[in-house]
View (tube, one colour):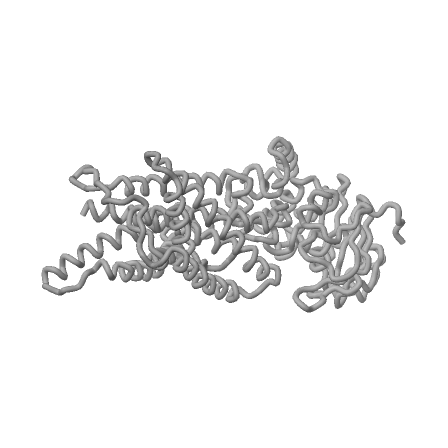
Length: 239
Length: 305
């Protein structure tokens, strides 16, 4: 279904877990450049584990992760960040006791100061609210603003791919739309995105999707195909 | 009363440095560093040994000895961290293992000090220190003035480092969310090494100033460990300015409290020397602070300003 030559990210039979327990088994996914791919599945299926393994927070026990033709196994999160992988976790996605601007400084931790100022302006153009609230403590932000800040933090390094783990989790419906619109805008500007989608709106943004169940990739399809699959929609998005 | 307050500020300055060392370890590595007590003594002994080697250069020898001792203790603590605590971190060991390791190391380091330098008290300079008469007739020794200045300067430097440098921000970030910090490009082991080195610097300095104002002895750290513990908790577990404020509070309360109680005891003819029970006042203060200000005397916790 996906042409090999345009792959930016590929996981090949990746097995990963925590402690002595495997959570993800032989997971293989492929993402093309500038593509927006969704991962869906029930809670505890291994979606977050897959994203953590790609970002380097977790080491795979088996399998390979290849980014732009380079094997990522053994590379630290810092090295993967330098290669262009931006990761936004589902929970604890900001530093709540730091100011907004300090969160952005953390996003640019490995950038030189002159580049930081340039990136800061770009990010402020995308998220004007962050400029207004730059000196406010991030812990005082609303859920939507926290998500914006988390995305902005990841964008400070100009990543080539964004890994978004349930970006609308816990947000009220108006904020869900706002956050997804930002994801859509970024994608339209050419950002390759891998998003863990927990609602239909997030899934609809994507071009393709993978279904993970019990740690295994059980289905890959276009979003249209998945949306036509009543069983999947009933099971994961409640109709 | 003025003399008690000055003594309290001097003692508080030493407590503040010891407490900052413990706070850094607590915040980044998430365990209370019981070994702070013998580390503090080891720092003082390193400086004492250097002082025996160096010629008298009008006080310059003390500065050189202090710098060498701070670096040496930083290195020794980092080696201990890499040998004992890094494997625990790598395995994701429960924090009780960190506490037990720290507690075990306490006895090992204490025994080594005892073996090398013996139980006798030692002094950086022979002869009594001559006090300077200050305002309201308060007598202050040069060592006490030095202690007061050094503590404030060190706190200012640490404050600047913490909030104005990239590495300092990396430490703050790691203390709040180590996973997110690593995703931002912070190398966890660099942070652990920096933390341990800083803890080594300030702990050695606390030991040297204690040795300078009182004396160098193997159990010197042990005597002030409880005071350090009270400062760490009351200061807001790592708030830099909070730790200094808490240390001054503990120092002054101990000195003034024990002085006033001593006067009362003398009045009623009760033959008790309060100087032996000063720590009890710290404990009482600890309970009061925890009851009324459970997040510490300063506004925040965990390296907040």
